[in-house]
Length: 114
Length: 112
Image (cartoon, rainbow over all chains, first blue to last red):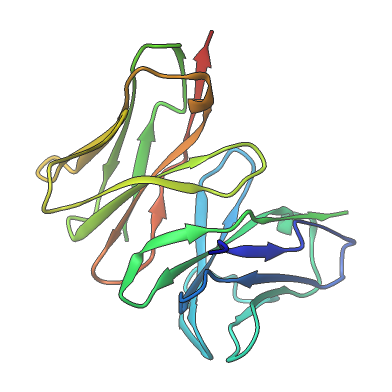
C-alpha cells in the first residue's frame, strides 16, 4: 500500500513563474491537506480538500495560491507569479473519511524561488 | 484559535538516556494530540497519538501523557538510540474542524 506521494520532490522557479505541486493521497483516503514549512519552523496549515470540494482554505494566502482536488487525478497546489518568500517545503497529508484527524504525510516538495 | 507551544527547541541526550518533550495548548476543545517525527529531507511521520479520554499511552520505547486540566502533553522516549535523532513535532486538533495545529518542533540529538 503506497503512502502519500508528492511530485516533484524539488522545484526551482524564477520570480514571476508558476509552480504546480501535485499530491496523490494514500489509497482509500478521501481527504487531502496542504501544509507549508519554512526552515526551522513547524508546519502551517494551508487548505483542506475533499474530491471536487474545498472544505477549509483559511490558511491560504488570499492571492496567487489556489488548490484543487479533482474527481480524477492528484490534488494540485498552484502558486502563480512566485516570489522569493514562497520558497519553502510544501507537504501534503491525507486521511480517511472515517478518521480525519489521523493524517499521513508525503515526502514534500521543496520549492526554491530564484 | 488554537496555539501550541513546544519546549525545548533543541535537546541533546546521551544514548541510552531518556528524552522528554513538552507541549501546551490553548483551546480546551482540542481532543486529539499526535506526535510526528521528521528526519532530514523527509515528511513528518506519525509516531504516536493520544485522545482526550486517555491520560497516557505507550508504544514500546515511546509514551505520551496528557493533562487536560493543565492543557499539557508530553512525549517520553526511553533508552534512546542514534536513530531517534530527528525533529519532533507535537500537534493538537479539535472537534470544531480538522485542522492540526503544530508546535515549532524539537530537534533531538542523541549523543554517542
